[in-house]
Image (cartoon, rainbow, N blue to C red; front, side, top):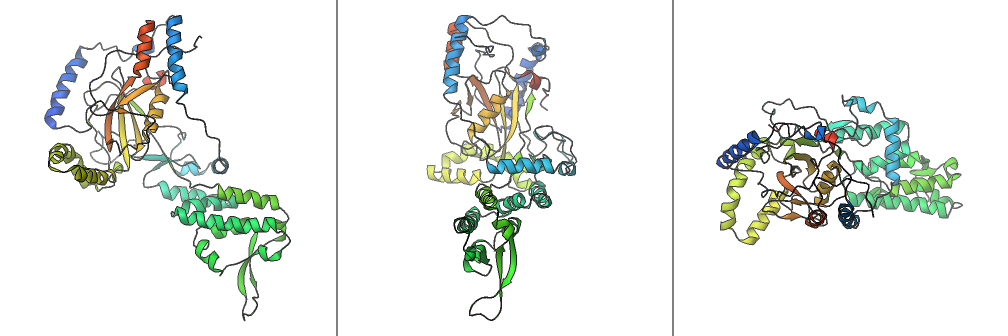
Length: 453
């Protein structure tokens, strides 16, 4: 069996244990001195080596067989692709019809771009990240954390003039935060539409009394519900009520809408499949040269659910107090405190140190799963089909298959991890006598490599 892919850079030199994301000034100074001497002795042209890489001979048959074994193991772990949902189609349509919204953000960059303007706050020139940024899924605009909710609501409301059904569905699922209440209301609306579909000749199912207890408790309280009824063909009408003096307000389905039962059924399915429109967190992927400052993080306030002063004090005291307090508290007390610590952080900044010393950095939600980091790293590799491992503090392996969040692993609000190839793959490569490549990351990422300062 022959492979069409070159073997990756598999360096046999193991990395030291991952440093904690916080160190005492004395430890940081000693580490800085040791690494600075190592960097001064290293060849200056090393970082530019990938750009002048010479063509290599094709892998031997033994090497191809070893890589094939590694590929087979990886294929067993690959997740299945997920098809587009009805809400995805709605969002794509909104994105096409709202090109002007992107200009509101003042940015001409593409939605997939990770380039973010540098912050302008005082003392923020050496921040590890300029802040937390998002992409609006409807317009592609890049949004700051404080703009996120407002801009998404504006984009949804502006779409009412072009597609009121899609806009009202997104409003129902996005503006109302109580997910249980939304589900109850949506299911009730779907029941109304099912009755019309099953009994098109019965007039009573085409009328909905607005003062009805069920309507008031389940539907009237939802933002966007009235817009949805009107968008699919219901009209507010005053009708007489038996044994009652005055008329009451009803929603009555128009004859035109009744003549198109397939449209009502389609709108019902769109409503049931609807999802909240959420901004996409921008990873802000960056690549740094090897640096003795790899484990030092100066984070902006966006990364905390604390005030600025509380966040600074927390960063300074946390690493100093953990070891001392761990000896004085019981296990139950420590676990309770750790759970409380998790809730303080919304985002985390993670760096992965590669075998050649380069650093790959990205921004994540604190409650995202470890698998998100594996995917992020895999997207940056030249040979993304080969299995690898990520090591946290004390050399603990972070498993891609475990359903653990970053805050459950202690990787908040920042952390430095170590990349290593899967040991089984290393054994296969060594047995085949293969030689490692000079670089692990994709060439386009190395062209934008930075100096960590």
